[in-house]
Amino acid sequence: QVQLVESGGGLVQAGGSLRLSCAASGSIFSLFNMAWYRQARGKQREVVASISRSGITTYAGSVKGRFTISRDNARNTVSLQMNSLKPEDTAVYYCKAARWYDGLDYWGQGTQVTVSS
Image (cartoon, rainbow, N blue to C red; front, top):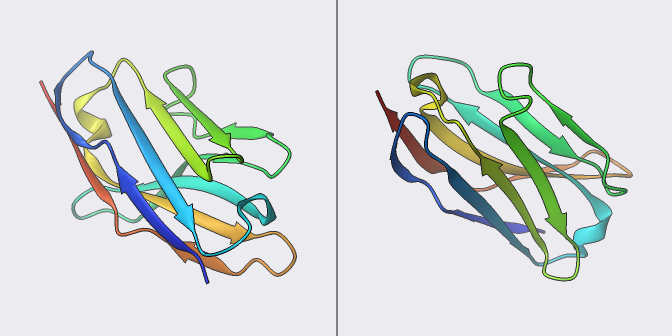
């Protein structure tokens, strides 16, 4: 069992920055591939960025060059640095942990990010 708690969301003007953090507890963090997803109102949840156990990162095309995902296995955290934010980045952002050997997923409760124009 893994518990995930996101933090760092809020209201920011277009062009601004936010840093989301996800703290994991309850299991060995290094066993998990991690990802950030988001869900805008009325839309499906979509993957924003992911980072593997070895640190390999992937990004959605819409955020590439603006967002950076990172993990700290010593502190059991994964972060998402979001720069040059746009109104279309407005969504609830979720942290997901996927256990590498069976793909079992755990989700956080989400944190709201609102970007005003």
